[in-house]
Amino acid sequence: MNQELLRIVDALARDKNIDKETMFEDLEAAMVSAIRKANAQTDDIVVRINRQSGDITASVNAVPMSVRDLGRIAAQTAKQVMIQRIRAAERDSLYEEYLDRRGEIVTGRVARWEGGSLVIDLGRVEAVLPKSEQIPGDSHQVEERIRAMILDVKEQPSQVKIVLSRTHPDFIRALFELEVPEVAEKIIEVKAIAREAGYRTKVAVNSLDTKVDPIGACVGIRGSRIKNIVDELGGEKIDIVRWNDSSKVLIAFALKPAEVNEIALCFELGRATVVVTDDQLSLAIGKRGQNVRLAARLTGWDIEILTPEEFNAGLDVLEKALREVSGVDSAVVDKIVAMGMVNVLDVEEAGEDPLVNELGMDRALAQAIVARCSEEAKKVSQAAEAAKEKKARLARQLEEEGERHQPLAEEPQEVEPPASTEQQAQ
Image (cartoon, rainbow, N blue to C red; front, side):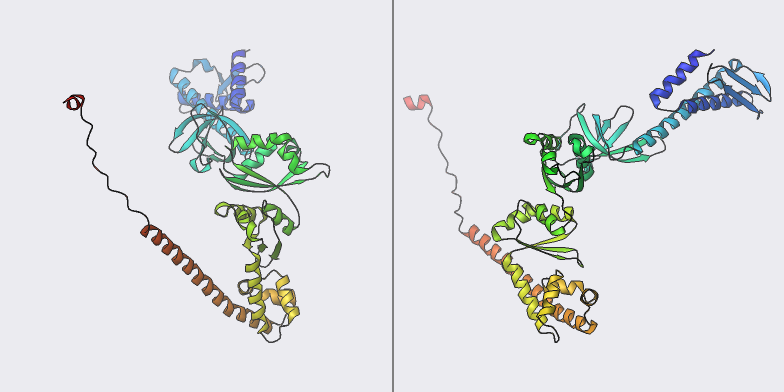
């Protein structure tokens, strides 16, 4: 019995994660190549390896032969064929394994830098964390342990390329599954994620068990669970939002910490007009528009933030324009506003079809309404552009006046060096 061969096959199959039967078939194919190398004119070559004993039997043109009789060149051929086949089988095994693990978090060691990308050693294979998938502001050192999500797996001729990510929204989802048992057990469902990596993330969660508070479970006792996630992300802010099937309620939750007065939804445009008081305006918009931008991504609505004065002014212009159209009364105005079209720009953009299909309006009347609103929309746009230019001009004037009144820097005066000790004595 050839126990040594069986041990080698078993060890290789275990280390490379290759099926043992595939290993035996590759060995048989390598030996066939070696025999063909030694017997160039031979076609009928059969090699069999006993899976239980490890004994090798070979025949050429139905005549038994011993593989030990092959020369050094044939043995080298068998070795090369075997190496190629093992590498190909290992590549296929790695590709299938990591393809099934897409979206999963892996832990590796920073092996080296290649340009702006990090090469991460995952044990059996190396993966790449591109610069675009790294959290802005993060710094990593060689030999550092790092966690990332498997974003993509690509099969290449010589290797399997595994692309990692730390900026993808699903990285947040996977972290919640690791840190919050209720999420992993599907008691709490992560419904939506909106993220600007390195700065802020909004996560909408829903509990399938009425006894479990989704926000409390995700935060943990004294914030222990969310703290672990924030630390992993380098201090990135995370807002946990309670999911609601009502778009109005969800939008109000998503815009927290701002308090919302009123929300008008226009399904035809996919737009939500949100009214907040002046003191809540900056909170609703957020730094550089981040809060409203993330809320829009989280809810799937195009959110427009207005103050009560702006909202009422738009309604007044719309009502005035509609009243000038023959056949329009208060009931028609109320129906159009109820559809979420709260200014003339909305009516112009939506067009006549929603008025005909949703309100059952005569098409001629609908066309007249849209035409009148389009005329008024041009005036509104021109007025807004003029106000914008006036504001910019005023800002430039204030800047120039500030420079004009800025005191000139005094010219430096020459200061004589102090006299030496000898000069003072004299």
